[in-house]
Image (tube, rainbow, N blue to C red):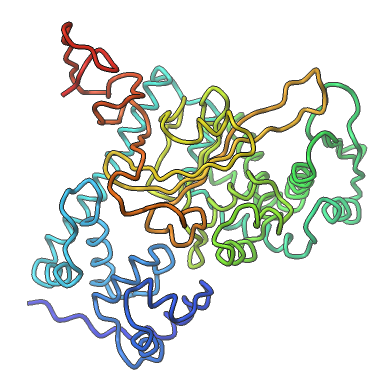
Length: 466
């Protein structure tokens, strides 16, 4: 018989978590599913955390709760609850007290179940990587792909750069004027406007100490280019240290990562972590309000929301992607369980494909993956003007979304029916790994599934699969 777990009194840590998340006691209690008086007693160490209440905190604040509950059984309980709630399982998950008894009576089996769930998740990721390899002919990855995978494996957050960039950002006023002044005052760099028909968005001449910017860019893009250059200079040490540890296999990938890290730092300068995270929570991730507050573009604000993964101060878990007119995914970041097809297009049932053809219209969608996970997504078509009739503008769409469990913090979900079974659009990642039958938009059968062809019957596609 195992010794019962010690009582866990975590009042100071629970109170610190609530204040860091800027929640009232009533808001936190409602999310956890307990009364306000019960929460008050926990915060004053009048009552310990029971297994069920600890699980409620872990479910309500899955990222922020990490490290608050130091009891080994409680951490196992949270992992078991996540595994038992996997949407691919048809039955509803057991109640917290049932899971707690399972850990007490069969701890070894519970650990094996959690480990099995983790192994299944890894296998799913491997299947997607095989799908990616199929799309590229099984050849070696290109430098661009190596860098995208590096950011994916880093969890879309680089702490040493983010914290250093935050220190710069909080000392500056929003907009490009303060950035230009800092470049000139501290580094002797003069700003120049590019002239001519075909000009670079940004060009730095180190010998002449001049930075040339394409004036056709909107103010938000000009500020981003200035922040990039500032990061290249003032965060050279941090960027170099990250680059050295990355160990990318080719010089081209290393140079691309240098650019990517400077771009990451630029976003962190324009949108300092804690200030941006606090404002995002306050406005419930209203992207238009965020972009006005920080003088950034819609795309920049969406991208930044997907990187708020600082340990102990995580933001809401979002995915972010950008698609072009042909449906190619040109940017992708995900702090959720959702992972995009890393090459080629995505499921055509996602609203981002429709949004790219309708600029400046915000679209909202409740989507459901084949295994049952639901996501609330927004998408907006954007146009970047070229400044010249001779150059076509760039047209694309960006999408941002979170799991339904986070929808209370996502203002765009307010008018969606999140509980109705048929309210969600059935979406997927890639046809080659999507098991749905009868999909109106299927392009080809899933990999590893035998197809059956009946010449006497024709549906949307001329085959069925096992």
